[in-house]
Length: 202
Image (cartoon, rainbow, N blue to C red; front, side):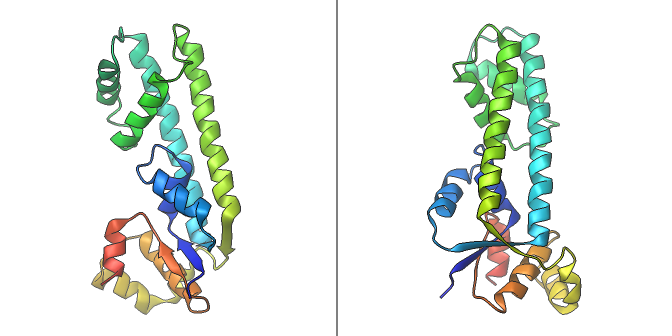
């Protein structure tokens, strides 16, 4: 019986950032499971790096929102959304995440005529929420401390993943870590990456 989940990086991201389209199902599964949750040294490193990148992008996104609102008369949510999306194409956040953040702002009771101050409060509120969820998720994880370069010890497996199954970095590193861990304990590999899931099912 598999009593542990070995989690991919994107599971932690989906749990942490509620604008993520996978957030509700991932959060429900993680919060309600009785299985132990495991990640490797590399998965933890990737999660923390990705978390910071998304945080930085959302900071930039809020700055652009303030710029749009300072230079336009916002008369409807539709205008608000289209204007912001048009001016933030270079910010590396998926549109569905951007739209959820915009709706969060538009529907907030802090969205009022004192906008520069209220936007700052909304930014802090959102970032605090993300950090709180991050800390909850990290607190649930059991570390498989195999080192970040564990994959180099398995050149044959690495070659198969890269050249036969076409799994890309960093996915192949995490898959090898999971495979090494599962040699001693049965696991279920938990991921939000459908393409990776299908490749690993071959």
